[in-house]
Image 1 (cartoon, rainbow, N blue to C red):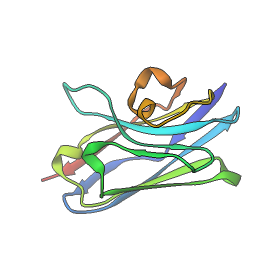
Image 2: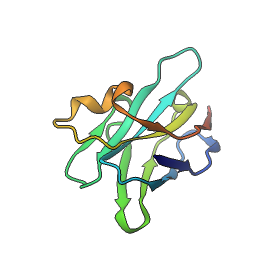
Image 3: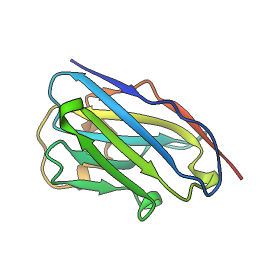
Image 4: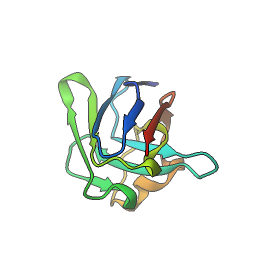
Length: 126
């Protein structure tokens, strides 16, 4: 089993940056991803990273505005989203998989993840 704990979201202004983390415990994960789900929309990938750090995948909506890193000793992944837009308003979920995968396109497939965090709301005021 893997337990995932996400840092809180909250209310931010458009144009601001937001740094968050996802801390894992339990089994060693192979990769972690962040997803977002806006009201009435599908849950979609924000960014994913392999635990080795060799593979990173950015969703189209955040390319150029998002960075991800991990601290292995803390089992924690950090993301920073910059130039936030009102359209970034969503519930954000951390997800993990313990199964080794290859390539990068799988990151955007929700079914490839075995464990999910509780989700936290991020609201960007326009």
